[in-house]
Length: 326
Image (tube, rainbow, N blue to C red; front, side, top):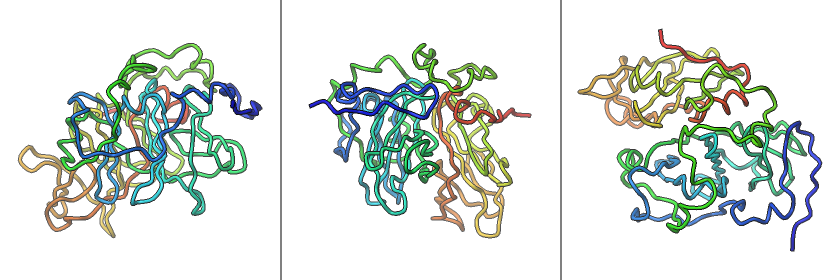
């Protein structure tokens, strides 16, 4: 039986799937999928989405996430939504609840150069990378964003050797969207037509950036620039003291607040010690976690951030700054 869908939408340029399209198997979300400790279905150079919550690491391979685009997860830390658009190389994770009520999501259409989500409880439409409800009964609600890494499998395994992995049959490597990889060029005309504003051409559209948001401010840090700077960058945004952690030459990059209690930490890097703070000499990993020294076990507060292509970050944040190294 094909679902009847109201195609009215308040969003300009939105293209909604009709009932028959919504029934397509490749548009169905992953609901509470299977996790495994076995890794033999992965290749070293597979791009993955890495979740690190409550000391538990989990990897979601691109080639498993590329068709559903959406995963509704039930984890020990609570319900989590993970989104991926392989065309714009953007991904995000959110706590999937509003006022204590769990929400589950599905792909609903295309909007502003990427996908459009709908929650099944209220049929509100949501932005996939800001976690904002755009229309419907929950309009204006914002999901809490969670740290999500983009990297290659070998990099994630190196950082988290005890990680669990999303299981998928090898046949899923083929099919829809298999032609896309992180930063691959091209925006299909049909997707470009859904952009609310003209394409922001301050950077090539497929430049991979770490997009960071705080206090109504947004800034894009091109990954090639971060690679030249090194694995750590102290900065400020929206009145907050922040630190960016990356693995130069990879997709791995996240941002954190660098205030711990009443101290603002200043971070540095040396080949012998790795990344450490000047104040205590504690050593920190890519997840913003102190792994040795006086602050061992301390977790920096995650700052809303994630890796994706410039055009999509700019579409969601039209007044975004672009970081330029001095």
